[in-house]
Image (cartoon, rainbow, N blue to C red; front, side):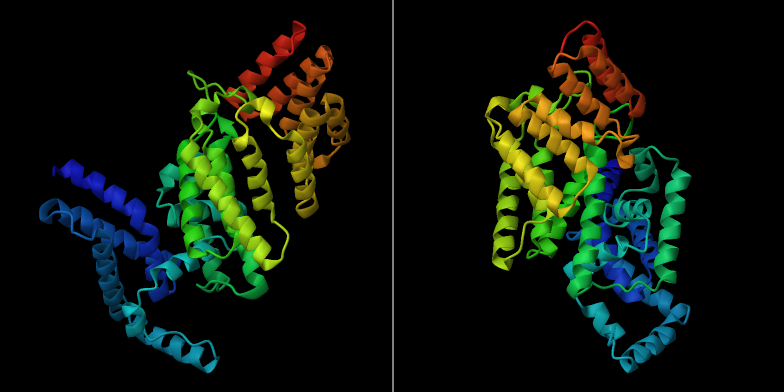
Length: 427
């Protein structure tokens, strides 16, 4: 193996193992920043030693052992061990027992550590931007530069978000633990929100020249699958995974030869990934089965996965069960009411019962403050007006939508539709 081959292997190992490594170290040192530094030290050691000694049989275990040894050395050198013992004694007195250091070092509940890290990185005390950045850094193994490139923000901005996030967690004394009881539901929703935000940014980029950023979709899907393995009895986790699997199945069909967007009804369904669809439907079925077993109503991600499943099961656009989709959106609006859900319901109603029905609902959203700068509202109105033959009004709406979007590919598509309306065509 050449040196460059070894470096590529190390990069791959790091991407796979870094989250587990950091999670295991946080359990030892109870400090995310310090844990990350120790993990980076282990990575540097691998970069120095593996080109000479070769990649070890179990590289993840090698990195963990190296990092743990460095943690022990650091604790002893800086007399952190005494402080940790005092903290452990204090925790025992306050009935919050913590494991002895030696026991901690010998424990192998890495999956639990990873789950604790997920909940810590997505703690509600952090802003949404900070949660996303910290999650991608700690759990996705992405560098600051990669996160900045994905979100089209300066690298310094991402670095500041991560530093502040770690500082905020430390100052708020956020425990490295999986919450229990009612708090679990609240915190789990925050975790799922972050993962879905990452996925959506990859699926429909809010800005830039690319319609999609597949790397973000893949990372969110990977995190979702990991979370499903860690929390197998949480239906909404499976609901989210099902939703992302089905949506990701259309990725190849969502862009044309030059990267232009291809809308759902115009997609070549032969290019959909039916392996991902099968995985998504299985995840949805599991979510629904657990929901029934709990005697509860389906959550928002399970409902959205059910909507995505309606599209996935249709062999042609004409076979789509739009009435069923409209009913699911109505159910979703009851669980998580929002103008965006209503706008989607308007589209489903239009497809099921005619454009005038959908337009009536879309028109009621025209003065909704949350949608003032949302380009999809005029985009949907433009589409429905064009279908009704009201081309001049449709043209104005498409042009307005184009002025609001920050995505170059989407702007081009909207302006093309505006031009078609100017010619009296419903493209």
